[in-house]
Length: 561
Image (tube, rainbow, N blue to C red; front, side, top):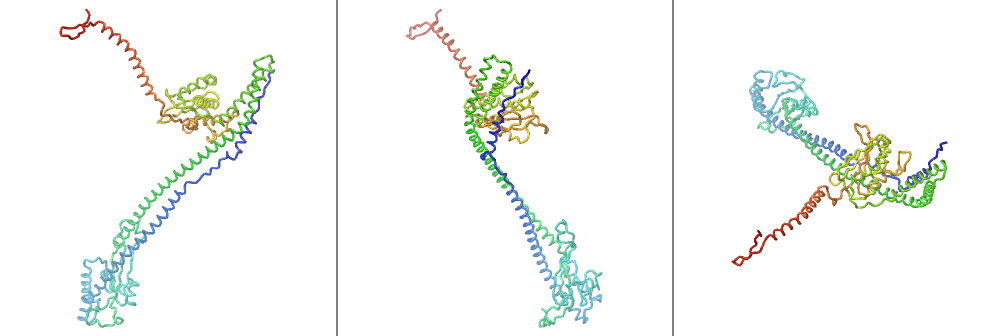
């Protein structure tokens, strides 16, 4: 009969610890996500406001420019009308009145004479047409003879001449000014300035100087038509120039504002990130301190009876003399007490992390050592390892702690793959950092990856949830960083990836330095071996020489024959 032995239930202890950690006020993160788009919104609002202001200002300036041009043209038209009135009176009205007694433009001779006078006055001037209206507001003279005797061409300005004896100006156009703004080449006679001036007697002549102004007669209404399209072209060009200048300056200002906003946003973002990091580290430190106090208070209470249970069960196993049922129960007690002891050890290791040593540690050798220890159990589950590491990846640190960190990563990968998988280990050194990456072929990280670094968080049915937090604590004690992510290809998760980023100490000799030292040592050894041989040869040569004193009193050495 096979007896099913239940495992010891110590999950209540884990739940108690986790609830204690989660309900502690110091552990709760309350970092509000601040909006960093205020500066950018301000720059956009400023841009829109300045654009509207620049459009308004350009329209205002262009309108004033156009008004100034039109006023100057009206002043010129007024002088032209006064001069034309004077010349018509002196060269046509007065001579015809003396010769014929009255002016009658229906007579061909008088009309021809007036036409000659008007054409001579128009010569060289930019005048489109001239009309003269009689007292009945009928066209009595026109440069276009088809308009003669027409009353439909009379305007309010003509009526004002006969009623108020006042001149007037009027702009007639073939299109609106807004449409003209977007018309590249305005056609001729698009804008016409109509000047209506009363034809009167030249009061500067001697016979008429003393005539009362109220009694001065109106002989007719002189209408002068001038093409002012070129003036509008100047006004439109100036308006576009102003608008373009304002827009360009505003665009430069906007770019500067955006640059400043992005710079400020980046600085604020970095500060907020740094603040959150400090808060997280502070919360983690407080969490560790609180958990350390709690674990320390209960560790002895658990370990003392646990040690007794473990040693007693081990003693009973070694002694034997028990039936099958008793043996199974004692083995269960021993295994569960051993597992509970490891759990308490995990708590203590996480709550009270050990300071890293200052030994030179070759991570390549450490990875190969861990794999050599775990290779048998991995092979049983058909899990292989691909280790692609350079010969030397050395840092200063604690060999035992780094061994445990790498060991935990291998165990996590084994548990994630369960069987039939591959763990790939790659590493490289770039500048002053070593990058050691572990990638398995499991299901990868699910959900929020950052939660896998929280203590007591686990997606497995068994375990304390302290494996990765302990590894992270070890890497941090070595001034490094641990990164978690999923290995992906075309959006498909291929497995989990854990990367260590560890700084390289400057006082660690490089591989090239080691080769130089090795070569130097070999050369020194060869030199030491060659030195005795040289001394032996020299002594032999000296023995073969004999002193001889020549007749000149000098001492000579000769070889013995």
